[in-house]
Image (cartoon, rainbow, N blue to C red; front, side):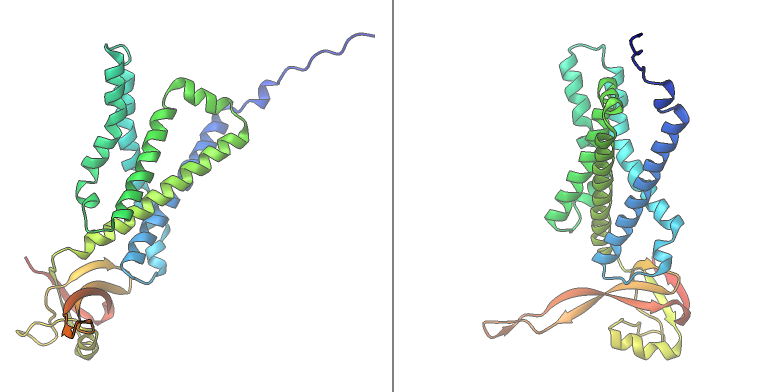
Length: 271
């Protein structure tokens, strides 16, 4: 009897080029969609804006997600190119240190205004943590030996890595939406609306300020979001209910109110 021949792994068992392209294209599309979905959700939730179908239109979600992901790729891409070009420069350790420090510096330059907004410290910290975690993961994987380890690792490990990236991108984009909402709250009021006569009474009850010069013309308002049916504006609300040591403390806070688009006759920007 002849000894059985040892079985060699077939070439067909290895993923082909088109298979890899499809696999990574699917992963990228899910990352973009998750980033857009959580970014919009964070923005609307922070401003207490009810969701409408138009807010989560497929094209809108992809647009917001693509911009979020591009920011992350830019933060990682420049250091990756720098590290590749500086491999033969000496002293090598200094150039590697500069390359690995670059994502943090680029992050600060990209998000300087947003990161120093009035958002909570925990929100800003979480945004920086998740954003930089994605950027440094990509920088780490850009090394040929590291990406080879991922490529040769079991499917379960690759799925776990993809899941971690998905979580980091989604969470980072959600916190970015939160910070964008805080930033929008402090925009200068610049839009005036001329409302239909039947809408003036209801707008007054909501606390929307009006100009004394013309009936139905609002004072300049801070429009923070626009949907197919509504303009969402931030208005001050005087809260006189706080009493401390027998002294009434008047303090001003803001709320978001909606103005129906079909009740707006005209809108103009006040410069």
